[in-house]
Image (tube, rainbow, N blue to C red; front, top):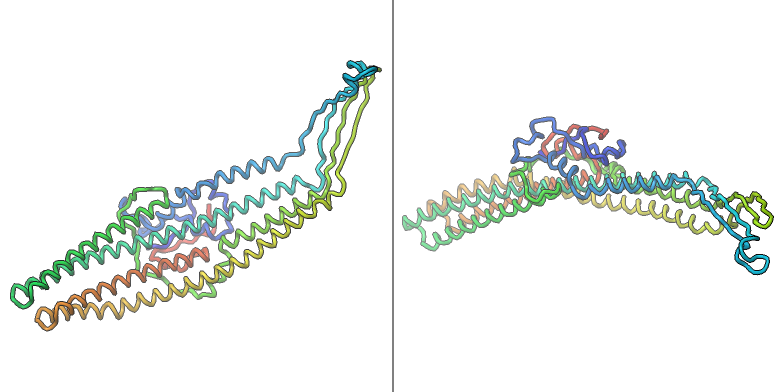
Length: 446
């Protein structure tokens, strides 16, 4: 019951801007369509509910609308043409001799601007457009990381619930053992010291139960913090800790790694660098400054038109360094992408094999080890009541069973956690039955 059902749903403005071709948001927008996915009540939450709340309320995602707004402002600035300037010049004013006063002044009023060469305006707009694509990809990476974290904390809570149940059963076993020891002591078949030890064991079991309850309370707070809530509004989470779904071959999983948004970021960053290269190349084309105006000669009371233009020389050579820098930055992005792919391969390999090992451990414990220990406890308890086994034999049999069941819970939680890591690395569901809920896969987010 931990898997996530995907289907189109409403979302924030930022989510609607995400490219529909990306697989990630087929995983992120979920709407429940069966009784398993619908929360049974206010005190119970499913993984689908947790993911939906985290995506809509997590503070780390709330910065993206502001980043989009900032890019929009930059886009408006990048689309502006060069400004016009109005200038006024006064010559031959306030001098000496014939040029004293303003009688011989030459007054000029002119309008000037710049003609951009090399299509600089389109290049600026291209950089902003690709910056928006980088921001989209970054938001997808953040959302996928959030999805993985929600799943991991959800599994932690689910495992903690099982540990609380186990601790409660351990406390009951300790109380039952105390009853049996007291009965034997009353019959004179065991010393009073064993009663004291059994009493101490029962109290320790109660303390262990309290500790697990406190740990569960903390983990619920940790989970609810992902959607900005400091006090959990649920009592339990729904899910089957011991259902793992079908195995998927490693090669098939790794083939999907290139679809991971973390890799997509490098692709869009590469396109951004190409846009920056084009922008740098446009700077090699010198802009032409022009002006046109009217000049009045006070001495002769005449007027005349004035015009002029100017452009820098050798701008291409002066801009070669900026072009080389932009090209080097693009090549650096491509190299970093290769490094990331190798790192993702290592992470996937570790998660894949650790998950398989955890599943093997759970199956061995469930089918062979725990049944044998349960039977051994029954027989040891019966033998202890008949006086054939000592108190230590009885306690050891009980502790071995509890330890095996605790190990089973930990292995099951590890299998689900590694499964969540695999899903985060591949940006796709690991298997249709991975967590016990059914998937409804939708390839086009809203």
